[in-house]
Length: 105
Image (cartoon, rainbow, N blue to C red; front, side):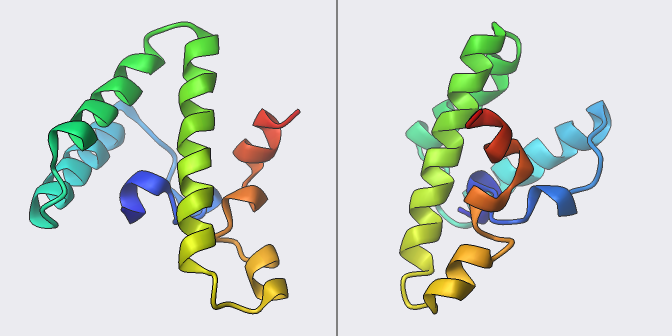
């Protein structure tokens, strides 16, 4: 779920262009199929995320918040055996991402 939950630090991602965004979306879908995770639910979630961008700012913000909630839950689960300080300060921790901090204000 790395590509869906964003465990790559947001700052490390290349600047998005329409072509690169489309390529990344297609790569994500291909990855889901390879991993056997291209369930109807996951594909509907991707569709909802893509369509949310075309909706109101409020809808888009709600989808971002939902994505961050999922990313945080996955990070907490996957880092439960880490040292506390390492987990809190990790660049992979969604709570440390600028976009997440912006949503909280």
